[in-house]
Length: 197
Image (cartoon, rainbow, N blue to C red):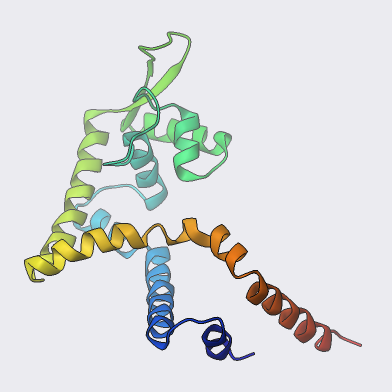
């Protein structure tokens, strides 16, 4: 199956095909580098923070994401940490307990519901999160400061717009039902031919 021919027959312009191919290659490389957590490793080493990356992730999960609503009253519970890290609550509980034992987090009583236990960062935990975040922003800011201002001004809205492409999967699958069915049939035919006798 020739992917470019199939996409061309589906009506996608050559420039779009080239863009999709280039973006896919960039994402593969980006994912490999992100999985190695190069920036996080560099931050921990350079800032001399005695934590590993999963422990750092817990602190960031307790702190909550910058610029995103947490969807609640601003209080973080073990379940919130589990959701933010996409791990099961029992593992989140163990990891939070480890951060409490190390002095980076503490348990407190919810102001909204006294029956609820919340997790907060200690001064040390906040210092780690703020330092790592600042380190990342310094590196990214240094890189972007070398771009012309108009490129940065154009890039951010385009990146925000592009970040929604995965939300389009269901719609695209429906509007391209014929092409998707042909792909599924091609896979079935190829795998049937390669089954052991």
